[in-house]
Amino acid sequence: MTHEPRLVEVRRNVLKQNDVIARALRDQFHTAGTFVVSMVSSPGSGKTAFLEKILTLMKPKCRVAALVGDLATDNDAARLARSQAPVKQITTGTLCHLEAAMVQKALQGWKLEDLDFLFVENVGNLVCPSSYDLGEDLRLVLMSVTEGEDKPLKYPTIFNSADVAVITKMDLAKAVEFDEQAANRSIQSVRPGMAVFKVSVKSGDGVEEFLKFLNARRVESRPATV
Amino acid sequence: MHELSIAMSIVDAAQEEAEKRGVQVAAVHLRLGPLSGVVRDALLSSYELACYDTPLKGTQLIIEDVPILVYCPKCKAEREPTSMQFFYCRECGTPSADVRHGKELEIVALEVQE
Image (cartoon, rainbow over all chains, first blue to last red; front, side, top):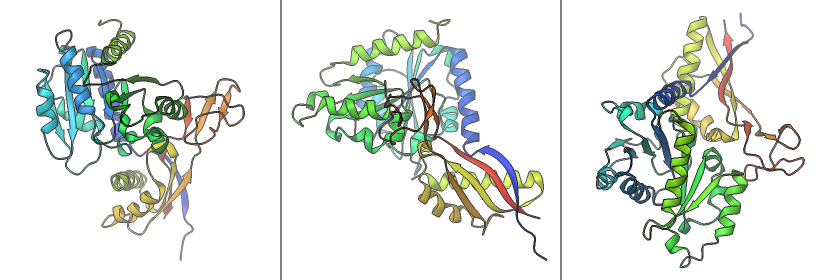
């Protein structure tokens, strides 16, 4: 005798496990007064160079640290360590993105109360990281002038999920005939109202302006601890 | 490509829910939004692989596509954007980043056999 299949209602988020950890992390960051910024971009758009620059500039003024995700090497962590800020590498193996549990594990042994800012550099990838909440306050998406102005239109999900965009390598803009307005239009099209900063790590242009923005965001979200 | 690990999470979650209820799964019903970051076809082909050697082997994944809806401040209602590239209200053209639907990646039901 065969039975007709029956439907049982379930309602369960597939990434529940990640979301539960991300929520716990967010609470922890909030209580400790640590403002957390995650960084996503395609490989080679200058995440590590930008991070090294801002860590170096921020280090004398506030307490900063970084976690950096990479598939196989610890080259980025070694580079970032030059800023004198505490840096820890998360090697993901073959995994193309960071998950909240990896951030949680990497933070073991660190006292969050001693940190004003924590940066989490994701694996270079514009697809997979968009699904995973890491408990961050701000998701920063970077694109370089050499990547093409329509990058946001090609990867709308990650740009839509981000809170702020940074266009890097502006010192090359003229050489590659980068169309600033077109890039801006693409970004505003997939994420209306998103703040966009144009920076050059080489010349330092635009970096201070971005740091001012970060500080203001931290003051806004952590009024009691600033 | 992270669809295989997502598929494995679906299998684990479905199996856990089935065990809780003492039932055997015939199919998993999933709601999937375009902003979930998960590609439908890649997920479907990963599902079979993820089921291998589990009690869910031979079960089906049935995907319901959820459209993107943003809150349009002008219409004062949830509206579809023009496209995934243009987050402007389809009705009146007002831009909106206030995404209300489209990020779904959730199991909504299990088809079970008693």
